[in-house]
Image (cartoon, rainbow, N blue to C red; front, side, top):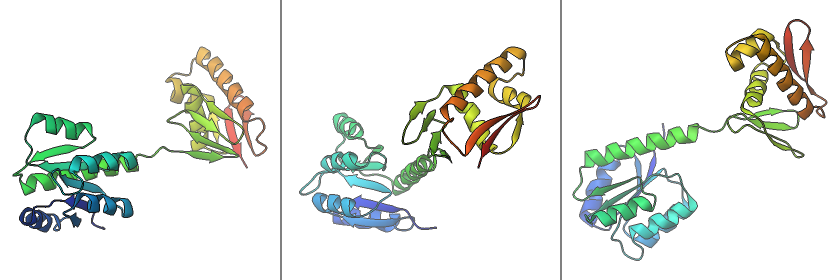
Length: 227
């Protein structure tokens, strides 16, 4: 597995050497001792996390973080600073930093923090919105959005759940009882009437699609046909 890339910005030569040496056992580290140079590196390259000192030449850590957040809202940022005032910590966190460690810090704690934020960031990336493509439509069930070049429709929660159930089982007969239990947890008569209403609504929405239709299977259920 490729190592995660860390942008590490620190102008204290001794501290930078010791910290980078330890971090390099776990990550790929790009070190800079100058604020402006560090920001230029960020703009030109890809990083998974930033570790920023605050007191830096040409551009301080707060300024770097501000500019980073204008371009990337997700990348984790950790401040390392000798500035112990509560106001400085609050300022750093308000700028969008994920954590603020006071010097002298524990290398073990820093590595643990980095691993936690990288793991959290990775999970965020993996949690992408699931989409379905059928006919000319794109469907985002989590957002209840169904759209193509002509329409952009927000479905109701039940309509979205019904459409997702069909798309998870294309060209397959779904019994009424299965659909009712999946959407309402019951298959009683009144829910059955509601199901018919939702089927009718979905049919109207996709009626212009020549290769997609919802077929009624008498006394059994329905089938989404995708050709």
